[in-house]
Image (cartoon, rainbow, N blue to C red):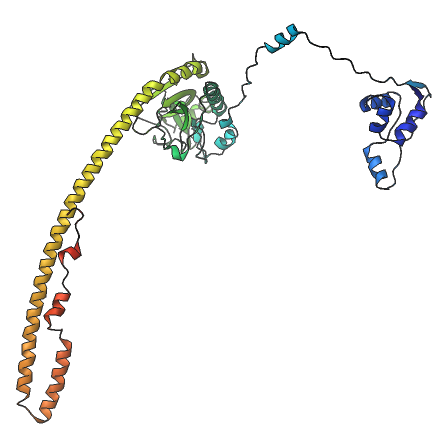
Length: 424
């Protein structure tokens, strides 16, 4: 089909491209390309929207050019080639692509920001983030990115074996062990300004399960013993640029001390988070061997430790059941002893109270005899003195307690009322 630029311009200005193109036997994309090639403007979607709403809309003008003839060749669909049986079977036997390994483990998404929101860390000490539910990573700010990289490689390697690394839930009742930070174990610990600095630790352990066996994971940057020099109100490493560049007169009133500082090398600690199971194994890197090269060996060692850990956990469960039974028996013996003591004490207290009640009743009877004798003597008096004494005798009797023995016995508390035995 052939038409001039002007004819094509009138067609595309009369209807949208999506309606003109099928009439010409081509696609809308092909028609738009032809219009662009021959400088034939066409209205956009906004024009047709305004026109459908009855609003004024302006058409683009056709630029000056030679009114040449345009060939519009309808597109013909190519027949689809049928596959032979050999090609179909070959397609079916194509090897299945391995699933793509994610670049970052889901547990580590966004944790860098939380680790950097930290309390003050002096002289390159370990970070102390405010958030406590984080992966078990101990690192200085300088080595944080490398710590996250090592943890990411380790977590992904475990995930590939089907061991999902996650932060333990509170309901799992798993506990984190104390992780040593010294690269070479010393007799004393000198981390922090006064040698007793506290290292941040998460509230919950980072764990994975091999079957039903939990294993905890901790990654910590190690510390080394270095010499620190006091200068200008603070301690600095003896090998730092500040100390090396200081003049001799500046070091006149300074002194040195030893302190444990992060060294940039890391240790992986795997342990049993089950309370009472004493099992742990660690791998640490050296200047000659980086920790990343040990990850395949770490994964294989942890997989091989499943049966040993299962035996230790079963032994601990049996020991815990035995300890629980012994404690229950001990508690029952204590309760029996305490019950017997309370029963004997109740009997003693009841007897003592009864004796006190009888003694009080005896004193009350003595007072009663006094009032009886006074009343008899009052009969022999007369006149004003008798009237006055009767009033005083009435007042005095009102002040005294009852002499009825039933009132006294009603106040008594029997032994069974004081304590009723559970075992009798």
